[in-house]
Image (cartoon, rainbow, N blue to C red; front, side, top):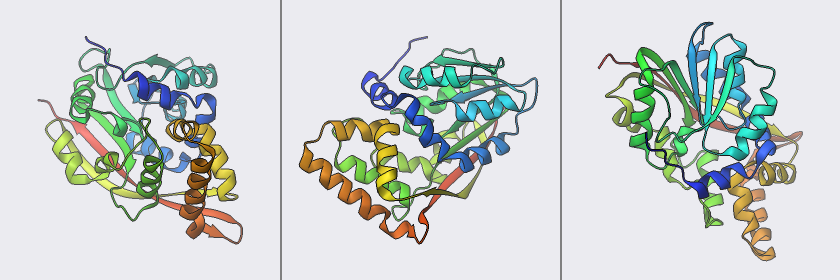
Length: 267
């Protein structure tokens, strides 16, 4: 099978290394919902696609399933391997969602939490995801909700304004539209889509800026390409984005996601 990998995108995402696990930490509530929706069982073989530092994969493995976790960014897989070394039932591999190195119907379930939504060729990624899921197998996707008034689309748009790197633009947000999901995945999966609310707490915007700068690879790549004045402008916009989230005890950031559950059709 031909392997495709966007090296520039992999480098941008992977540059954060172990710092990226803070980003996953801030997504813990949504990751938990997704794993509950998948409901992995001992004896099942589950694929976690676009695993990042492996938080979702570890949650699944801790419930007894055998897990293969894949990501195209070696910079994220290295810390994921270190964090997952205690789990004998979890294997991490470098692989592109658009050309998976797995046999047809290899997995009882596939999960991707805020991951495969960023694949450049969504139709190809969907075809590959369906190919490796056995008939009757389960798929769970967690993606950000498609609403420009929501926090995450605003955040991605802000990063995009300052980036010539492969940072997430507005385009990935159509992955959070239930009709779009049905058009891409509906031929292969019987689908159920539901919005879920998630929340991030943080002390203040400047603390979050430092964590995102180190942990969110595309944002770090954007900042590294800017001169001092542009970085100051970026920080000012970052503070303004988070000003409505400030409470008397710190930031409280509400985020809306779309939880997609699917059952693989027989044909």
